[in-house]
Image (cartoon, rainbow, N blue to C red; front, side, top):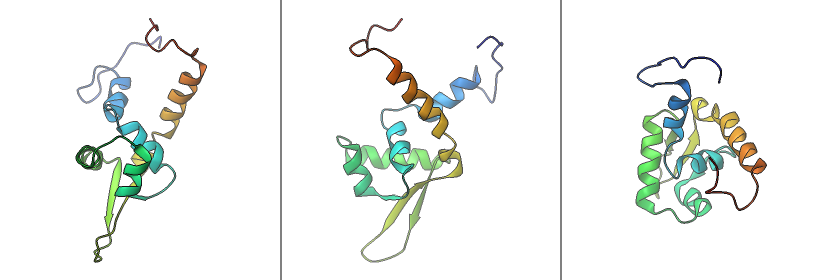
Length: 115
């Protein structure tokens, strides 16, 4: 990053805007699993593992408000709802791929030693 940062819509630099969309413990993993296609709430919760129902519900609502996830209610009884990524959510794929590539390049056991 050799160029000066530009303020964009209240963020100090463009990377801060991206990090804002990925902030939170569960957001990157929700995006990761939804990259495979639409999932129902319980299936997404199973894939995420240790997330509570309340936390996943809150995370999905926030991501929907940010335009990353869309919720499709089929209006059936029993209720059936799918969650999927919007175009904006799918556009984060190269960002997550770069993060995964970076993590794989790091030596094992040095999680807290990066400076």
